[in-house]
Length: 208
Image (cartoon, rainbow, N blue to C red; front, side, top):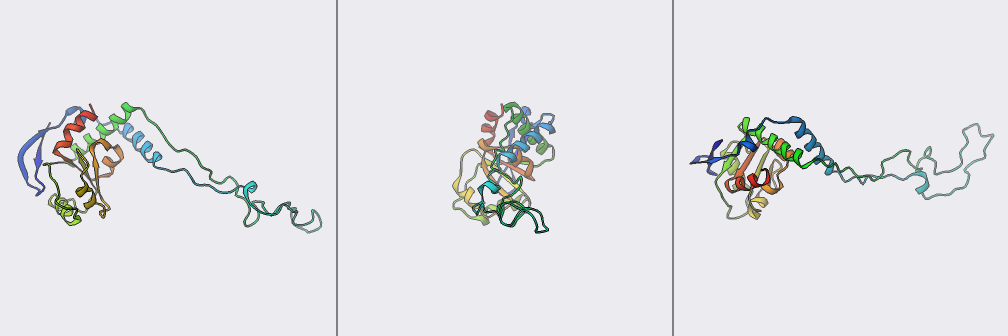
């Protein structure tokens, strides 16, 4: 499959690049996408929520009232979950949320997500470019040239570019990543996926 390479001005450069059919033209597997996104989101969770049980509460163990004759239920400790400041019943405890999936499923999910994007005409290939200095305004200008400044965008580069990364720090809907870090969630979550020309070669090596 051949696709136009665009200048950052939004106009075509007159050149085309060949995209691998094994990556961009497969029959998408939505279940693989679901499994990979689910795994990615689970792995982002810290799992450090915790409350104190009655054995961890600092307080007196003195019986707070006599056993009988009060007309109310018996109570043996101020640390009981029934009293304010007492321990929690079945509260959250630190746990591991990590969820691993097979590497082949992960690759299939990324290929499926990219195939969806190419069908939706949401993939843009850009000529190699650099920003002279980190300016949010300059990066927004590039996005506006493709009418996606108000949409979620994912830019994938072959190497880390400090100026481009810093230019997007204040943009909530713009993400810049090295193509080595490509993941299904970012692809699916973005309205448009932009590749810098050099990153396609690396992508072919990652998703063989």
